[in-house]
Length: 163
Image 1 (spheres, rainbow, N blue to C red):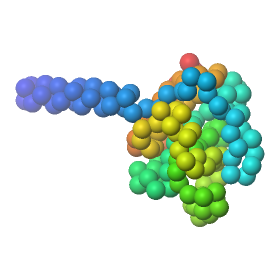
Image 2 (tube, rainbow, N blue to C red):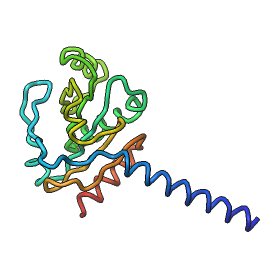
Image 3 (cartoon, rainbow, N blue to C red):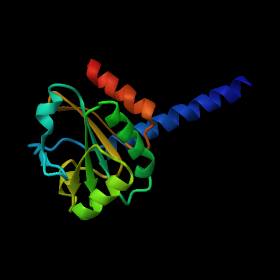
């Protein structure tokens, strides 16, 4: 019994280590000279750096074509509805009109920048969607990728706010 427990713990540690390294490698990184003044789909100008000095901002890189994003995007809407500042970047998803229809159909009301050609995602060295960046005081506080449950997003935002 003790040997089985030790084996399970060993495998868990190895899994977490590998997962952590892969997540670190895939996570977006802030560009050297970030251009964080974007225009959303409603032509409103958003200065993400300025906003991040008031409260942590969650940048959410996703795509309408991304099957994993269909699991995470409802969490983003929940956070937005709860008052969390969200700026989402729809990576190579569709024309602005098609993206607007997609967002309306799914009742997504968070700020969405249409990254038609993926230039913003590439500038942030994004590798996979969904990807998340939490900005605070104009700096990356956390950066991570993949399926992330709502409770973990809330925890990460809480910790970023405390730091």
